[in-house]
Structures are given as structure tokens and as C-alpha cells.
Length: 207
Image (cartoon, rainbow, N blue to C red; front, side, top):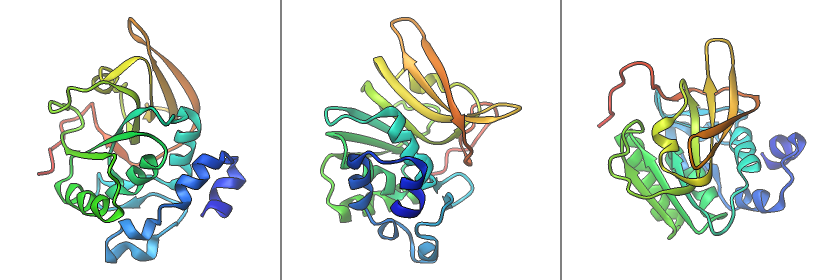
């Protein structure tokens, strides 16, 4: 995956490469999905739960540049796969998951991986009532269909959020930078993934 998907697409930061090398994707998949390990696509657990395509996740990291001292919030746990990659890059990771089955899978996988700098929380992505913390960086592992204002509120000033934002005409990676008042929004590149947070329509919380 590293040699066929990441390096040919200019993911060459050795810290990122090393973080991916330490995590085996098949260890985070149920038996029924083992045959999909390392495909060049998103791996779906259900309609709204999935592992983000590795190349897109790597591009997120390449853009947001995690630092060892960062406290990062990850939205959408991907069964703990992306969480574990982040755990190799920063001091502290908080991962939130709103699908109860995937939350349980993530808890099990994180315990098996022996990552001690990870906190996995069960929460609706649009509410986050259980989170009092502020973060240096937030990674949204999927597409949103409106600016993620509730997540931007969880950033420290000068903090960064990265996600895929879909509008009526296109789908792109955006980098948001929190300012003392408001935020700035920078379109990076075209990309697509399943919708992770639907801000427009009513959605059920998957207990």
C-alpha cells in the first residue's frame, strides 16, 4: 500500500510513512472484510461508518502536519485503524464514534494495539456534548455537507481542521484555520468519500 498508493502520490514524509508501516489494516477489520485490506478505496462497515481511503487520510496528514505535542480530535474512528496511525504521530488522540457497533470494535482494536495515548468516545458527531476540551487539530474522516461549525468551536485559536466538504457542484478537501474571531477556509484539492456528517438533513444517532 505504501509503495503502490502513498509514495507515487507524493506522500514521502518519513514520519508519516513510518506511522502507516506500524499499523496493519487487517488487524482492524472484522473477518467478513479481511479480503478488502489495503484496497485503494474506502472500506464500508455500514452506510455511515467506514475506513477512509488510505491515500486521502495520508493527504489529510500531509496537509495538517501533526506535531508530537498536538492533542488531536478524530471524528469517525474507522474501527481504530486511523486512530492508531495518529497515535504514532502525536501525544494524545481523542476519537469519537457515533455508531455503537463500530465504537465497540474500535475499543477492542485499540486495546489489542496497546495504544495508551488514545481516548475513544461514543458521541453524536453533530452534538459533542461530552467534550469539554479544545484541540490543536481536528481530522474529520469523511465528507460533510456544510461547514462543521460545531467542530470548529472545539478548536483552539490558530488550530486547524481538515475534512472533505461537498456542495451542490463539487467535493473537495478543505483546511479550516481558527481565528480569534471566526475562521478562514482554504480549498486544497478535489476528493470524495461517503458522507460522515449530514448537517442538512435529520439523521439518527446509531445506538
